[in-house]
Length: 416
Image 1 (cartoon, one colour):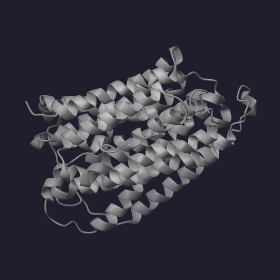
Image 2 (cartoon, one colour; image 1 turned 120 degrees about the horizontal axis):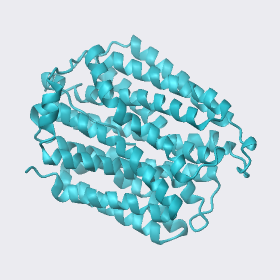
Image 3 (cartoon, one colour; image 1 turned 135 degrees about the horizontal axis):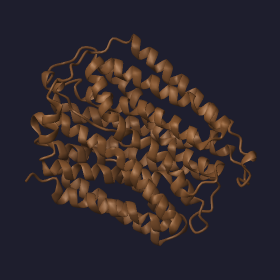
């Protein structure tokens, strides 16, 4: 899953200087990124579950993505303000606690079988994840020299991908396996299938927060700037604005595809799978992203980032079109393979978009982080298209997103 990346002025102060306890801090942040990926990717399992339990159409089921990724839009700026006030470590602890509260609220939401309560719990959970993202990424970037920040960020994002790879398999066994074959009768559905996993996840988040509280992590200062003035200047960089659109499209396409793999594989003209079996195949999609991120730093060191981005987006576009135009195993594996070529897109778009911003880099990073709201809006539009036409037709929407990313990799990233 995409994770927002940011650089901070504190990094400039630490440029080319070792940071004490950096190894312990980086190991802690790898755990943080793993949990963020794991929790985020469980949405791909929640969507078919909620669609069944509440008899929703695809647009209504995508309120899950709308609430989860909408938190990035509404909570990113407040999260930055909180970080400025209490620092990175305390903000990460608060993020874990808020996310845990959201997990615990799944218990009464499932018991009452009220969709609105699920969405409220999910927004609270996502608010905690947003705070962890906004605090964790720049902290990673500032843990050493600026020359190696991309390598550290790629490594932590790879652990994020480990979480996204494991989560679908875990969720399929514990959540989707609880769906009866006849989902038309809501009383047949065991709500404990969603209650128990999130209670355990909430408890784990509390334990991680407690451990993080006891660890002595490097204190890295966040730069103080006149935020509104710099934000106005940051928007004047065309390659940053076009990059924000690229992030919007990338996250939207990635989430739209991943969130509907289960329902897609259930289609008669694709694989006619049961939900719990189809859910396990989601791991292949996110597993491709994991593999790609582990090898991505080598590719980006050998070739121009813009060309790498354009080629990956072109292959993703072709694979989506193949899936739309075929059936059976060809349609399934071509779509699952898109995950591999998604892997480098976020980090590459981000790097190209903030290049040359200088002192406006912080605010440019905030703009790009806000653009993650594409994960809320594009899947929702996908759901509407799926309701009116078909899931296959709806995949034209992420295909269009990849066409824009091709443009950005070839031309849009260039400075005017």
